[in-house]
Length: 281
Image (cartoon, rainbow, N blue to C red; front, side, top):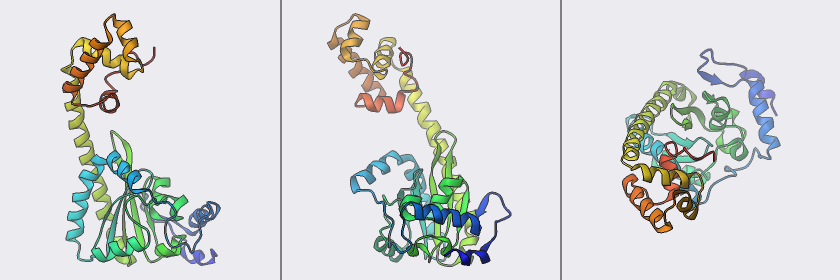
């Protein structure tokens, strides 16, 4: 099964771009086989429900808001429209597809849509799962894919890294012609860097806004929220501070208005790094 890879032994000299040789492709194929992936399967095995996909999209809101328009603009500038941009989250689930209507239709027939997983457990050897493994730019030739339904695509996948969030996701560009794809490696790496830079900038701005809102809280409001974030109940906070439960509720309601949040969970998500005084009690 792996004899044909003997003619494809090569590693790219640029250490920032990884072309897999036959030995490492063989290892990845063996892993795919052990995971129960079938070479003749006609689509990825794992695809989230619409509800779970929407949760993923919400969790990656900043990444999507920055990347989606940038990918649309980049795609529009390409002469060859038979390419596909895939934006995935850090676990390899597709968040966005940017391509022509014809390519989008073909993807749908292959079960590739928002919520589709390109992990090795789902799609066997592919550029996205290898980029997840190596955390660097990976190039995969068509015939190096484990599953037949991917073998007509030549793919480059690049990690998207944020100074604040670490690995946020992966950007993949796929084409049917290998030579055209090689020329696009600088483009996809540049796009990943721009996305990373803009995510960091937006995160920094948002963090500054959140800090300013937190500083608007009174001392009593901070203390009450700190206890609640640490897991104390309203009753326990009331006993600690020797005030009534209704007073605690009033303080919390006023604090939520200042922070522009609707519930404790949202407060934790946005402000937990400030509200840590009683977390170890």
